[in-house]
Image 1 (spheres, one colour):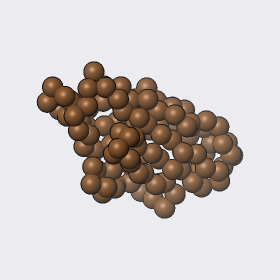
Image 2 (cartoon, helix red, strand yellow):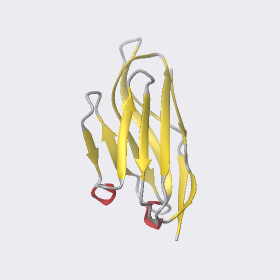
Image 3 (cartoon, helix red, strand yellow):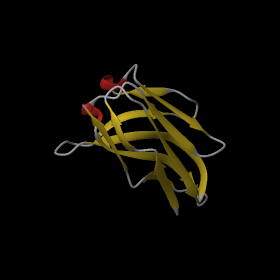
Length: 120
């Protein structure tokens, strides 16, 4: 069994910053991709950013230059540094990972979500 626990969400004014963290634990053999999705009210869930085990990154266009994704493989943790936040960044942010369990099963695991609210 694998668990992802997110932290770092909250309320911030436009132009401010937040840093999200997500720690994976449990029956993990190796973690491949890690990343963040978000879902705003009435909208579909969208990919925000992702990072491979080797450190290659991918961002949705709306956050390029403002958000930075990183990971610490020794801690099974992925981070999302969010700067210059805008009201349209308001959403529930979910971390995910594609990993290989100790039973050699390839699975995708999701966190419970953390709310980010940006006031204008």
